[in-house]
Image (cartoon, rainbow, N blue to C red):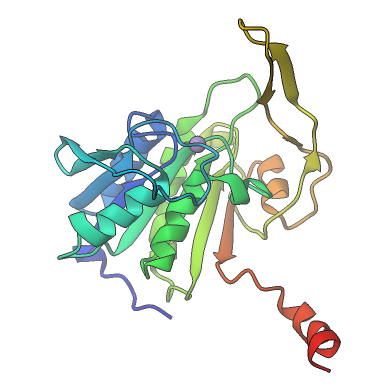
Length: 260
Ligand code: MN
């Protein structure tokens, strides 16, 4: 268990995968400033949705100062957190990393693709408590940012009162409705959705075929207790995510097969 975070002297680092100019990161900055006077933003220059936990190793990276305690990196969310922790803030490390607020939910299988969650993973690997935040929205509708903005401060405050569990980040998803229509909180486990086939095919101006990957999951029937189900019930979903990916119950059967 990590030490409790000192609320009065908390340094917060913010990142995301939608890019430093995305609306959600501005909202998260506002939320963070309600909790602390020492807020830093290090985020990708360009959108990195779907970048997952990728790390840029084949070219140099730049840390460009774009405002007071705001930096843009020409890389991935993981690059941003790594540069912030290992260089920019190395003399006084962040106490908390917040990633988001992502435009769109990150539930079920999204966690394996999400750059938003990956920024929180990187912080967790570096030993810093981290929370990923995403705002769900109805297909084709506007993103109800008010909902994330209304619930995020309270969610973060309550999580900061925990003894932070090791190797764990918290994945928060806000429901696709207005703050008044939200039905409170649900503590959830990672769910699953049906696999869709949403590949757009075409021919480019030079006559070569192309494929464009769209939304590859669809709601289906959500299992109770999951992040997917909480959002369909219009609740704020809170999921503890553990970074040890081992399937522990399988270990003993596997040992019998390989070790006798
Ligand atoms: Mn995104």
